[in-house]
Amino acid sequence: MNARTARALQCSSLLLAVGLAATACGSSGASGSAAQDEPEFTGRGPITYVAGKDSTGVTKKIIDRWNTNHPKEKVTFIQLPTDPDTQRQQMIQNAQTKSDAYTVLSLDVVWTSEFAAHRWIDRLPADEFPLGKMVKPIVETGKYRGGQYAIPASSDGGMLYYRTDLLKKAGIAQPPTTWAQMKKDCAKVKKLPGAKGMSCYAGQFHKYEGLTVNFAEAVHSAGGEILDAHGKPHVDTSKARKGLDFLAASVKDKTIPKEATTYQEEDARRAFQKGELIFARNWPYMYSLVEKSKSETSGKFAVAPLPGLNATGTSSLGGHDLALSSFAKNKATAIDFMKFYTSEANARLALKDGSLAPPYAKLYDDKALVKKYPYLPTLKRSILHAQPRPRVVQYGDATAAIQREAYAAMTGNKSSKQALRDLQKSLRDAVAQ
Ligand code: GLC
Image (cartoon, rainbow, N blue to C red; front, side):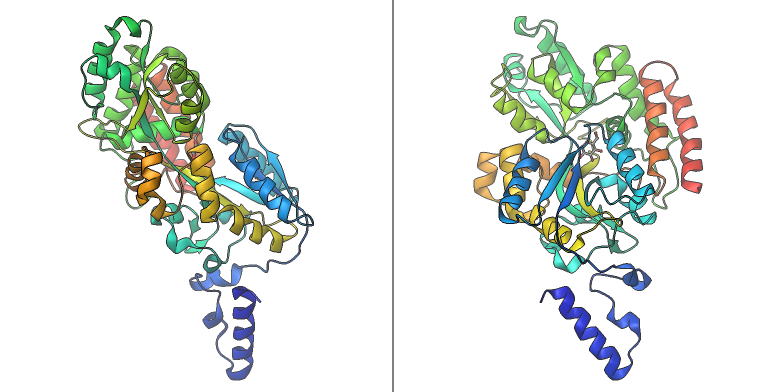
């Protein structure tokens, strides 16, 4: 008997015996009225796992391991495109038609509120997952109104990748902590004969979710905010403008090469790997791919915290959590698979094979792991200091507005001032819905 069944039995006998109020017997981890929303998870058999492109190969490995041991409860991997906006749209379409084609969803951390509020995903039995061993802000990403709707599989924090060989040759002892320093360092490096034609910096500036990430980082790293502490839009400020100005002015003065306005994560990785960039902003997954690439960059790079306006910058909190589609079949199998996927053993595998950020706190302080994966302390810092993107039910509208305005400013079609004024208005409309 699992903890859940035991609790249900205990509760029903208590209720029969003394007529206790039903609320006293909500599932643990649940708070208030949402407790009764936690559904029954029954049915065993084949299920599907739906996620974006498996660029590190880790997902396939985890699923293969599960399938070997569960021949009657096989998981089929439905691989969606790399672009998170397309993933979100396909998952929403599946939910809106109440289709049972998708069982376990790999949700970007920013979609939890939207999916939970629409009841496209089930409230989960939090106490059946080792959430207490995970880093708190990572666990928070799976919560909505006190309930746990998604379980962290991997986290993500942005880092500044830099060429150790070139900085050294240019006489630069430390990676930059501010944008101004980064520009100065680039000017020095570019004078080296080996740095001909290189660009200074790129992140993800194509008009998609990655731009929302990079825009939020620029704004937060300049001391600004997108929503205030009460969840109200507060982006039409001079601090936020300094953040957006950094991005827009950097395209103009070619610190950021023009082609980077078409870059997603993989484009930035390839450019850095090919030796086209001195500095690049990316997630930890890039570390192992560049290291394994046997390119001219492998063995010649390291990571540092993202730079900011006056001091070290602030990353956006990224990552993926597993959720269960409300319309799925075989939910008992799904819950077991989610437990397996999000286990510490698989977090270790994802760290080893794909340099993915583990949700488990202790892995960041494990001396043997830190020796093997020297980026871990920087990653820990990035995640612990990260700021979430707007946590709103209308996330689709909010991110579309951010992408539109940030892109207009970066491509020189609007001043930062105007872009932020327009963004403030669009966010107000989105939040008010
Ligand atoms: C990574 C992050 C995710 C983010 C996306 C943007 O996958 O984990 O949170 O939204 O990149 O491209």
